[in-house]
Image 1 (cartoon, rainbow over the protein chains, first blue to last red):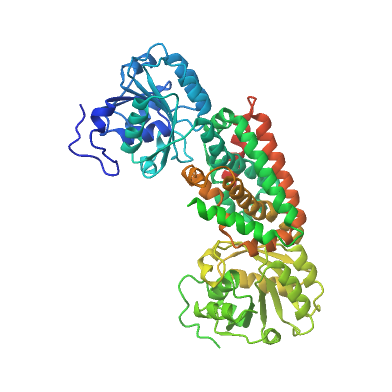
Image 2 (tube, each protein chain N blue to C red):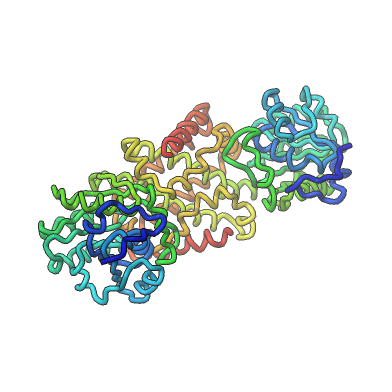
Length: 294
Length: 294
């Protein structure tokens, strides 16, 4: 049992969350797993870390994201709460691997940024396992334990995408989201994937594409001389881990394609307005849309 | 003659810049004109402000961007240095209006972000007027005098696009650029327009288009819940003044269209790679390109 007498600064301590959450196993000790481990330590009864790469698990432990590491995947089943914090394609594989070993009553949640495939795989778990899709909307561009910033969870949206009618899963997921300082928002997995394709995956794709366009635009020193702070902001997401971005773009490929088509249409609207009087109004609409996002 | 005994903090004082630059008239007291006025006061012998909108000129004067306002456009011709800091289409009109009134030896520079049309219009000035295109790569999203941040000029690129063989224009432009703390970079106007279409105008266009796509993606509260800090960065440029953005998109329309076609190609490359193994490599290339921009 962990010492809760001195809660660490910056971490929300929900009354009773320790008892409710019990022993947590985090699978995947990268940025997301480390961020959640840091936020859950002192809140859950125990946080244990598993990563296929033992070096990554040790790095996360050194950042104090867990009380200990877990030596093998099957031992994850000893936990009361299993958090899958790996790229989306691996989450789906892990769920199929864990289906036979998870104990009745175990609560399972993930952190993937595409949810339809995850929720479908969760639907193949025994009904006695309480599973729900999760997407904490917090992170940095820096891969691995070093990139984890648990304070980013404070006030962030933590999307929950139900698998089936399961009040226990929903309650535990809400407790976990609130325990790390986030705001649980329940949403259908397909609606989530449609929205996040446009609010997150498309911006990532555009940042990488824009970086490629500028790199091809001219001599590197001339391009660098004309690189404004505006460009720096517009391409910031292209500093993200390529493996992570590839993971969610592939997992949400259909919606990503649809979002890119929407963007192409919006760009064409602006280009069509270049010769006319409506350009300012069209841009003013875009500005209003951005102001509403705050 | 201005008091140079107490140079203001944050403003570079090039030896002799006061004598060299003489009396400066800034036409257009918006964000760019106010920024340059703030940076040039105490460096030039005098800074006077003209704006067709007297309220804007007064607002700029209140920010201390000039020593006085100029009551009418024709009085601009009394200055030794004329800085045209209005949207690009107006710069071209102003140059044609001023062609008959500017005195021999006057130095003319502008701040527009598209240069081919400006340089062409400058070519119609008498040869005894020393004109050169200028583009200080510094600014904020906030329109008007209130948005001016003279410190943004420190270390920024100040592109100079020559009109004709004119060593006087080039020397005075370099003195002015360095006097405000920027780095003069001489470049052909067409090369500038090609590059800036990709490093600045396209990112602006994409920010507005992305804002429109997210606004149409779903219910406003759901979209807002899924708006990440990544999206905030990616759409930051859509907070810019629509009139300013419309001005440079129109002035550089051909290159903006070509840049949008380049982007569409780069997006399609990523989409085509979604089903294959090359996606990570393609994204890693984009990341390298961004890292080279620093």
